[in-house]
Length: 334
Image (tube, rainbow, N blue to C red):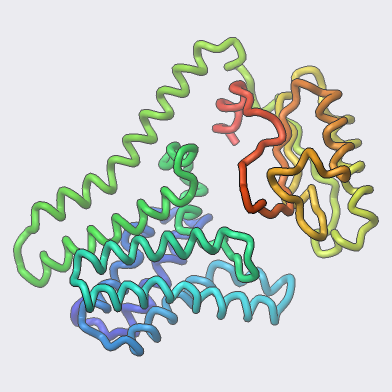
């Protein structure tokens, strides 16, 4: 890569990120996607030019993976893609500055820290929130790789991706520039890549063993009811009242469940409010009283629903119903 012009390295990072993104089968490319950009930075490129090449990479990634926003609104799609690509440059510019001032180790650690911080902020309830391209989401079609997400969430996947990219880059840079195999970085890269896989295998094995000991382990997808009220998402806010849509969801659910049903799945933003529900005060919202009545009538039912929510200042995660241990084998199949 040392002979490739900057524009090719920039484009290569954008294309690798796109190629690794769901539903592509080339998920493993996410572990090397940032290496061309890191190689470009290592050449000692000036800050302004580095920003331009980073922006090109992020623009390609955003445009190639989220072009479908155009179907909702063309100006909105252009604005979202341009703005999100710009925001993604901030961690890289911070990394560039720290590395120049404090050296390689501090620089590469700062890149991981800055990127994870950027994703965390992007997950919060602010005007430019756009978490679709959180790196941890790249494994959405490879759930067997990330069984530990139940402990870390997608941020754990983002940390995995950034760490492996940095370690592999440092190994390759020393290998191609120095001509010698750098054993420490080879070992670190291998461990960073493989240990999460092994952890997923252990978690899956432990859950299978636990499920085998439970009388409810025979649950299958037949115990799940998926409700789709056939409301045009672009007309959702104008197709009758929101209250009427909630009652329709409950009516359809009541007509489909039986004594063996364990899980009912509702669509994205099935629970909607113009102001957004405060996530840790759902039971205090009178609008949702029909929902609580529905769950009270069916005490064995667990509900999985999308909602337009917003966190409270003192945020406490809350589920509609405490997780049922019977759902683990079912959700793994989903």
